[in-house]
Length: 238
Image (cartoon, rainbow, N blue to C red; front, side):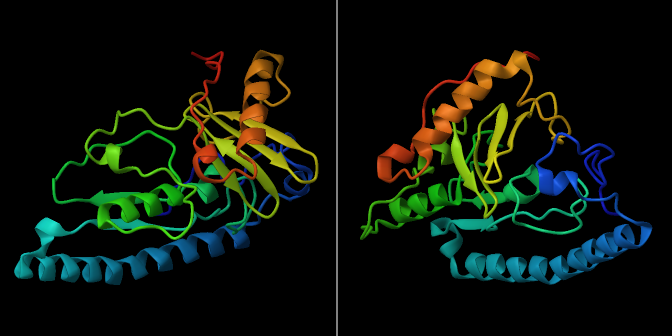
């Protein structure tokens, strides 16, 4: 069955931006359609699994597996009923902004990584590993050091954006500035489902200021200026 998070068909969206606040609770029919769509997507993954298996078998047979990096990722996630949004990808909420990243490499090293990464960092890593010379300045930071040590020093914030908003993702926080003027801030350790917007909570005033400053620095960045290594205050929950 489809996993149902606490954010699914959220009871109270009063602290969300105005276009989400105006969404009604989803009907039984809408929920059924979302779950049916999810099941059909899971079925299509079976052919994807077979395709990946065939590629790996061919690499093993040819002896090229020891000289090959296999990367599985996506350009975005998808909102499937979270916060009453029946189906969309053009949001900064975690279900939409977060994408999978699995990396099979010749060394066999494969520890989980808690750093905030961007697909631009994947691009920079591919360029480095291939020995290619980029014809333009890369905005991403090569994540090659993380392929041997996922605890290595890394950027503290990543820029995220959709057509409706711009924001940052950090280890503890998600901060969004919507173009309609609304602001959202989430403590991801205390509230991973993004149910409570703490943007107006005085306990997080210094956090909001730090996030706004980081976003200002990253907005329109290019090259090395896209690498943010500043510090953020710890959340009150810590």
